[in-house]
Image 1 (cartoon, rainbow, N blue to C red):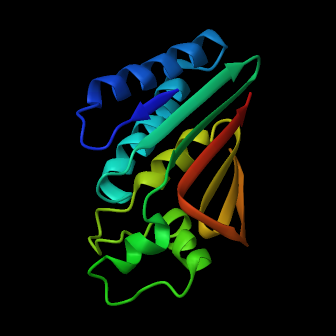
Image 2 (tube, rainbow, N blue to C red; image 1 turned 90 degrees about the vertical axis):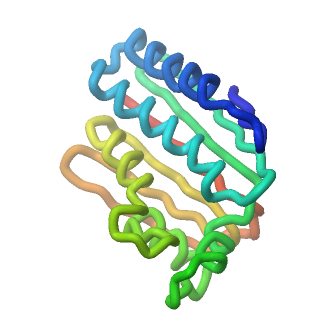
Length: 174
């Protein structure tokens, strides 16, 4: 488990954590290129806490690799997906948490409005494409589950009880 403390330089710890995940995936039989993509996705999610959660918010990351299965999770108790869009300069704001999750995860719509931003979840989604993977994102009053396989993907968006912050979990099978 990695605890990213707000306001502390933790890039080395984050790099080491992602490298450890990659090494364990390779040792468990995941192809090196897929393991690199997955560890890169974990790194992206962890560093996004600093950018998106708000000032002074810690982040947590965890993973486990077992025979033919792995999971990773990143969480924070920050402002959540709605808070991120509400604080943005965009004229258009999502109507609710479900729409905000769809914008962030499926539509890759950045809260900055810049066309080259908002690609973090593309990294995560593409990294699980070669494996039988499921990505679950939960924030505010909504969750989004995305099943990602080599030949197709589908998502389920639903209302949930309010959760402060942002949680991303990924389950992989090979």
